[in-house]
Image (cartoon, rainbow, N blue to C red; front, side, top):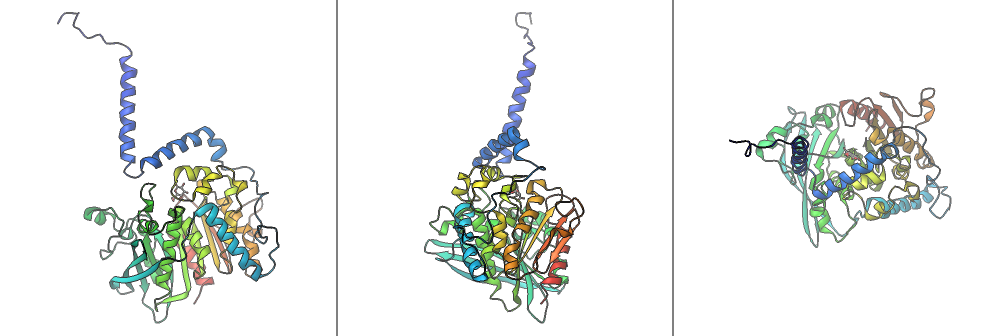
Length: 448
Ligand code: GTR
């Protein structure tokens, strides 16, 4: 081939080639990520990422001063009227719940639906130490019916037992390696995947340990009430209502309350010892459900973070602006209107914890999980105390802190008869160590 035809290699072929490779890689990643995140979420995530990267020193703050000067008073009505008696607090509690519904979580339907239950399977489990029961929970309105599958393990017992109820992230088959567990209605796993995923999240539920210590465990896949997805969150229980502000976290809380509807009808269940538990985003739902549902005796928030137990005014770790950018389907429209202005909120999360009084509340964090802001959760629990004290309940004190500390250290638990806190060393998760704290606390303060 003469030189006229010899291809000329130009220096700029190299950067051009690298750019092409980078673009192909980004496209491949986006297509892979779209398996888990709809485009709307991904755009929100990337816009939020730009926000975080551009202002990360401001938004993802992990230390420094906190401004609680505008924290709403627990024992003062929105119009300034003091709350001095438990009767006064009943009105304040309702006011707080209404404010959270209007400004944060959105609609939480209290009526206009019926709930029915059908036992699909029941059998012996854990070598006879427990019974397993799987129940279809059907919610029906004039617009139709939506089903959710409750999985429950109860210890064999002569008398009614306490039950810990919580939503799971990945489907009922993931909480325990038991081949009899039926696939949740919203699972997208095929048979092969169901087999592979059996029990992959067993440590998050510690079913053997709970049963051995006399506690029942009940769980439902969160997606059975609202798929955790900006495109499809409103295709299940939310589709039964004409409530545009009925959002995903509200649907998960609604689902927990339908699980309680079932539990209170079971003779094997001690209806005075129904506990709701939630980790992270499902901890946000557990706190919202527990604040509303007075049938729940103890509410456990595990690493629930922003718009869970942690004070929004902390503005440390995940922020109100960030969470609404990343998860537009979780909370109501009005919440997004506040942008980053946490001080403008008529509520904060300590008020939600206060609505649990006169029942019991337990907040836990992980030491390295600064995105969930353990300091802001500890401050929130302390700030909720006036409601519990008004009922004469026993609350925790900061006297337990080591010299110079502003929150419990890793491995420390701080308990009173009606309030508990612990901080586990390590990262964002719910682990056996957390369950050991919870079961010990319930043994001591929720004994039958
Ligand atoms: C994070 C989210 C947190 C928390 C967490 C989880 O992406 O920002 O608020 O919900 O997910 O649920 O594990």
